[in-house]
Image 1 (spheres, rainbow, N blue to C red):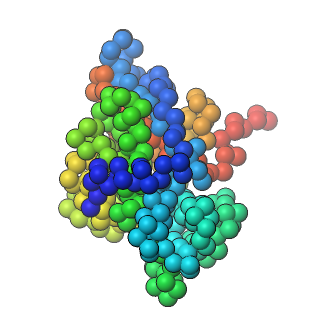
Image 2: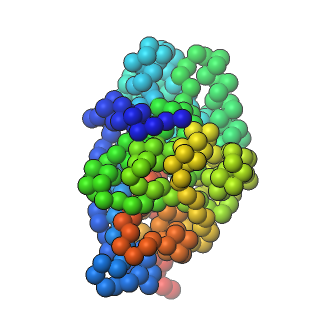
Length: 326
């Protein structure tokens, strides 16, 4: 379990290591079809541009906090760090390890996007491909860490990782002057949701958005505990955890975090909209949060102040350009 105090400690620890990402206000029209136009009626909307964070996702925050906290406690071995990842977490741990001066080994499923694998190698990480699902890569990484004595780095279910991700929530509170009601963000294993919900507990509500084909939070809330789910679809490379993390479930239950589901088609359309309207190239998983507004899966109340987190940009943007007519 983590609390706001853990997130505040993380913010102090990683200060100067991560970017403070912009939070521009945007007109709600493109994001909320049919939204009222009269002053004071439409929801107020911001986009948290975490896609420009180091390594292209929010995960640099948690990676730095986990590794630096281990070093402070004397638990960072010369063997370095071992992580499992569909891509983004691995990139973050490899980046943080390189900056701290220790080696990194990252286990990825065979389905990991080539752009992310190339990024891992460019950061100096040793990449090991295992299986077709994140869970298989995680099992192999855990064994490797036990065998070598390296620091085990979990993509989303370690307290320091979740607390580090939560520093994004502290930034949102500061940048809005505390005037935010709801934060919409994509959920895979739930580390980002856990951190932001802890950071904003008692101040704003967090709503997790998931593809219908990767419903870890939705199923965990319904069951009262994390449960295994089948994963597939366009966002499986970044939101493909087969089970919500225990920390995420505990924080969600404590803070009243919500869950909504969106279709793959809605995610694809939302991703294209972000490029067309704002020239923002995001991952399919990232676009899920926008899809919730576009489809009405989440409907803000009149005047509600909503922040939409754009959490990752490690994507191949070639399919975003309009096709030339023949």
